[in-house]
Length: 433
Image 1 (cartoon, one colour):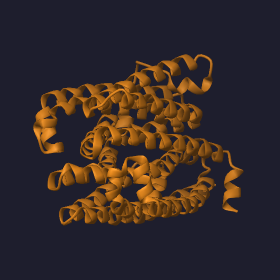
Image 2 (cartoon, rainbow, N blue to C red):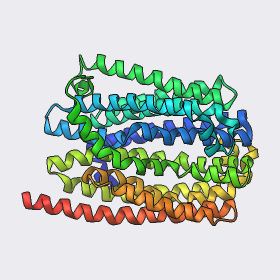
Image 3 (cartoon, rainbow, N blue to C red):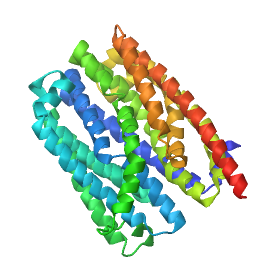
Image 4 (cartoon, rainbow, N blue to C red):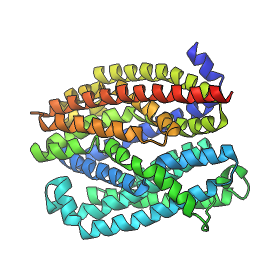
C-alpha cells in the first residue's frame, strides 16, 4: 500500500533516479576499494584511509555549509521566482575559491604539524598538500552536485556523479602509492568541476532550467552573507559527521598499529558501501521540503517522509542481515583475504545501519524547516559520546560498539526534533488556511 502511493508521485521519479545512481556509485566504490586493497596492502590501506578521510573533513571546512545552504536557497528562489538563484550559485563559488587558497597556504606552512596530529609522525609530511588538493576537488564536485539538486536537475546530478566516479578510478589504476593516488584524485575532481561549470554556462543558453546556475560577479554581498549565516553554524556538524570514521582510525593507528587501522578501515568500508542508499536519497528531501514550506504543501511532504521511514527501516535491516551472513565473503571480494580477520568488527558496525539510516533521512528535512542548526547539536553530542567511549575502550571491538551507542542517540534525537518541527509547521499551515 505504501509502495503504491510512492509510485504514483512525481517525487518517486527523482527517488528512483537517485537510487539507481547510488547503485552505480556503490559498485564503483567496491571496485575502487578492491584495487586499492590489493595495491597497497593492509598497512598502507589504513594510511590511505586516514589521508582520504582527513581530506574529506577538510573539504567541509572549505565548503562552509554550502552543501546544505545552496540546494535550500536555490530551490526556495525558484519557488518564489525572485531570480536570486544565480547570485547564490556565484556567491558559493567565490566562497570556495577563497577558502581553498587559505587552506592550501595553511597546508604548506604547517605540513609537519598536521602530519604529526593525523599520523603520529612527521614521516607522512608529504601527504599534507595532496590531502588539501583532494579536499579542494571533493569540495568542488560536492558544491556542483548540490547546485544541481537545488535547481531540480536530478538527471545532471546523477550523470555527473557517475562520470566523476569513473574518471577518479583512473587515478587508482595508474598510480601505486598513497601520495600520487590522493593527488591525482584531487586534480581529476578539480578539472571535472571546471568542465561542469563550463557545461552549465553553455547549457543555460538553450535550457531555461540551467539559468539559475549562471555565474554573476556583481552585487553578491547580500546573498553571500545569507549563505554564510545559514551555513557557518552547520560546519561543525558536517565536520563531526565525517570525522566519525576518521578519529577512530587515528586513535587505533596511535594506540595499536597500522595493521589494525587497515582492518578497521575495511570494516567501516563495508558499512559505508551501504550508506549511499540512505544519504543521497535523503538529499532530495532538502530542496523538496524547502520548496514545500514556501509553497504551503508541507502536509504532503510530511506523509511522504513517514512512508520513507518504513522503506528505510526495511532496507537497513535487510542490509544488516546480508552483511552479517556474508561478512567474510564481502571482505574477501571487496578487498582481499588479508582483511577477513576484520569480519567481527564489520558485523558490529553493520548494526549502526538502522539508527544511522533514520538520521540520514531526517537530517535534511530538519535543516530545510529550521535555520537553527539542530543537526549540529545532535552530531556534537553524539561525537562526545563516541569519543568518551573510544577513550575508555580496551580494544578495537569495544571501539566498534561505540559507534552503535552514538548512532542510537542520533536516531532518537533526530526523530524527536523532527516531530516537534513538523507539528510547528503544520500548525502554521493550518493557521494560514
